Length: 138
Image 1 (cartoon, rainbow, N blue to C red):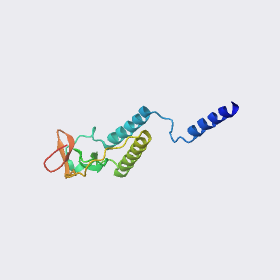
Image 2 (spheres, one colour):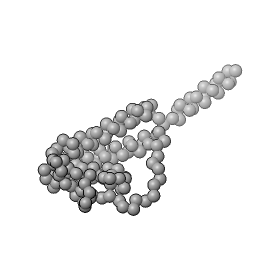
Image 3 (cartoon, rainbow, N blue to C red):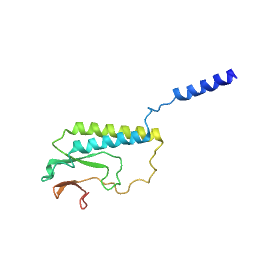
Image 4 (tube, one colour):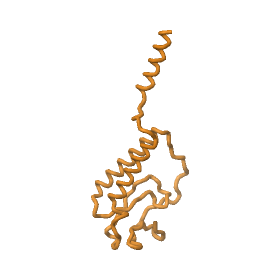
């Protein structure tokens, strides 16, 4: 009986010691990811800085989703440090990849995008910056 108890204890310890889980819940991970995203949006000033001159705005790739309506790009005020913004985006994407792997979320395999969306510029509409794709605004 002692041997069985020892074997069960050893097996339980092995299972817990091999875990690469950081002890956070899925809700906590999602909350952190949302916080990182909100930090990017706040830093970019896209929701707080009025747009009167499109030349004061730029766009940067955030997601690898070329067929989405925005092509995976986000807007930013050129008053912010682009290197800092890109670092925040890199941190967001790394954490997103980490929790996707941790929780077993994998994107569906989709056929190649036949019409990838790449913005051609920025327009100011009602004092808000909008990505411009030739004929379509987002």
